[in-house]
Length: 463
Image 1 (cartoon, helix red, strand yellow):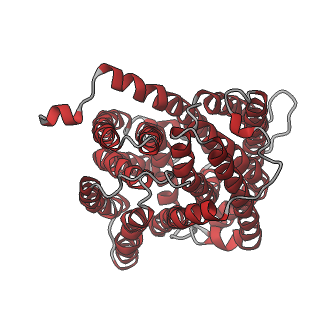
Image 2 (cartoon, helix red, strand yellow):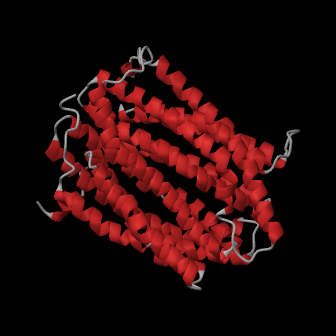
Image 3 (tube, one colour):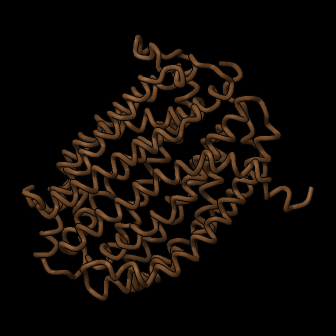
């Protein structure tokens, strides 16, 4: 077989991929675009408000990743149970994800209530005046207190959405997301600026709009799932008991603990990386926030491809079609990398234009532009690493993904960033560029593990 036949699929293959990935791209794209508008709206109030929200969102991001980890761990089995047409198996994995999600919410709220302010203070450095630092802390605390209300609906909504995707239903989570972002956008405008008689709450208004949107998303997706039992038979009687078979629970926890720990470590690791960048002052915090906002919008393609890999390859593994699973995975990885090359080119064009939207200093705009150029260069590496990670995870090789993902981040990137940020006078763009080298290392590691093929496993044949 020629290299091109290995990497490129036929028309039918890409139709199947887009049927799975496109709704996820649209959902993530709309959500990220509204987050971008949120960011711009708050950014037009002032740099301190924007920085305060950016810091809190970075902290809450760790909680979000813990929830994603729960759904990823159970989702490995959910997708394979769906591939083997095992309804009871899907029910059991759903119950377990609800239980663990509730634990995550309890822990998350407790930690943020008790240690929210010290966590925000970790990001406040530099030669900026004391008033600006105090204002940023104040805005961050206000935003955090309201955002805590949205943690529960976010966790429940994600549990339902993930279960639907694993069962092949990707449109409903997309519709729920569209509804949520519309609510978020409208109430952001009303509550941040105080339009049409609504109070002018600023950052508190932004948080209130986000929390409200998460309740809307959760209620819609729960309503649809319980109204469409013929499409989602697993939901019938799912709450009659919350017991999960010990053997299955043990298998999921054993496989899933590395995923959950990895997600938490990766999220906290990214927060640590941003904390290292923050040593260059409030301008650095603002610049990283601006560049990350547009990066998140551009990364929806490779993020959706990761979801496509987990669903398509997972279902094939569960059905025992191991050779076909490997073939599809190779083509999916190639498609992800090619897409990221194109996205990187788009980012190069946007780099000098996007920061101009913000009401901030020329210094911040210049730093943001430089970081966007760096992100554009590394985009294909991000896409390849993400696809490799999902490949290994879908086959149950969660221990390897732990080493591959968090191992490289905490073993290389963070110590490297800590040393460079504390003991050198490198500018923010140079510091940021050098700290991305870990993804090049991950690319070689990921290639070796995927090519080895140890991830090609049917995890549910004995359940």
